[in-house]
Amino acid sequence: MNNEVVVLFGAGSIGEAIVRRVAAGRKLLLADYNEDKLAALQQHLSEAGFSVKTIKADLSSRASIKEVVAKAQSLGKIMGLVDAAGVSPSQASAEQVLKVDLYGTSVLLEEFGKVMASGGAGIVISSQSGHRLPALSVEDNKALAMTPTEELLNLPILQSDIITDSLAAYQYAKRANVLRVAAESVKWQERGARINAISPGIIMTPLALDELNGPRGAGYKKMFDSMVTKRPGTPDEIAGLAELLMDRRSAFITGSDFLVDGGITAQYWYGDVSEVRN
Image (cartoon, rainbow, N blue to C red):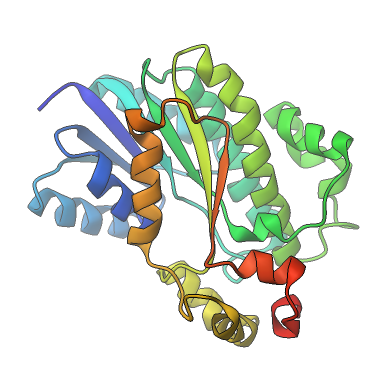
């Protein structure tokens, strides 16, 4: 076992699929708010031969994220970060979505950007939802990308006159994730590390099942008929791309976002599929 560490935030299906590909022979630190999920994933991965530690963590808390950073540092050289944590529009209020998915991801990028080892790489799991927003102004893009983290939630475009429900909050959070990845990648480069985002479409996970069984479920299910795949994606399809992006083969790629959604966003903007827009 070498002294390299991979940190996974979010003990869900996509995160597990990714670390199975990138954490072999390394120390793996799992962070999640749900201790039952942590214990289950630790057992699952340990039985598969991985060296696994866990820590309870709250993505909406800077203090909690700093505890994860300190724990990871105590284990060795931090070579990998996978941010697969978050809440969906059907799981949380608009305020909670912004606090966890937007603010929390920004803190995570910031705090791990201070400690990543040279040659290290990170992945933020964003969402196709960030690509559903119309184009923002240059000023709004810059504000979402570069406003100091502790001031982010005070931005005018994140107030209740614009963020009218949890879906709008989710879309803005995921757009911000991509912009923050680009901006923070500049600082990560100073340490010789890379950070990219992946924006998945409908991937079969417990979170996706919540959406499919929620108020927007019927619309999501109709999307499948318009897609080239005729089906949702799988965690392994996201993990395959993440593995490439975290590998040295992708040394020339940083600050980028990759949309992996079976073509549904292209349908949304340029197709003639009314149920997608509805």
